[in-house]
Image (cartoon, rainbow, N blue to C red; front, side):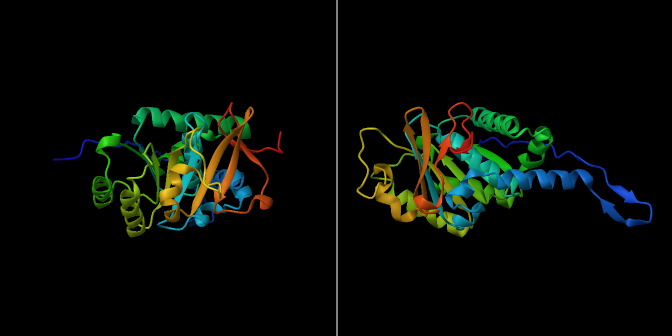
Length: 272
């Protein structure tokens, strides 16, 4: 029986018509393609994570795990969406898996972040750019109790074997991190390596849980060795600071980054 999951249907519209040179029909100039290329490059270079020593996707190797840690409501999903958008701008396929929200709500997160990016950087072509990169995203939902690595692997196999979608990066939002999770994460690590995928997790922390002496939050302690990168979102007064706990540069190598509570965008605190 075919799995009951939602496939996002994206219409690939031709955004530009080729302009033929009078001197040679072999020479075709795609002016809008070039404009979009420059716009995407500019937005990629503006990615604040580069300031933390995270240069594109290279800092997280294929098969690697990355964690975004924060308390409930602080901005983990918004952070994941910005990671996804940066990959999509680089023409990398992102599979967004939610165990807590329906497809429509996840989609609204993307729309809001895209709108805020357009406003912050005064991007006039954002609607066209969004349509151009949207085919690089696929949203999949599970109920927490029904999620398992074999089931995920089966669904990924369905997508790839049917030529529907070939994920290069996976975002997993809502997966519990507890003392029983070690086996599942080891299996996920094997799956990520088998498919050469990078995997990011949203990890919920709790105020009452004390971190380890090295600063690693409690939910990640039992599986920290499986993670190459860990980033914490830490409220400090009215600001949400972005701190690299593992991977990336050292604290002295990068400026203080914050998550703007009004737009949920990552920014350099020194830039007003």
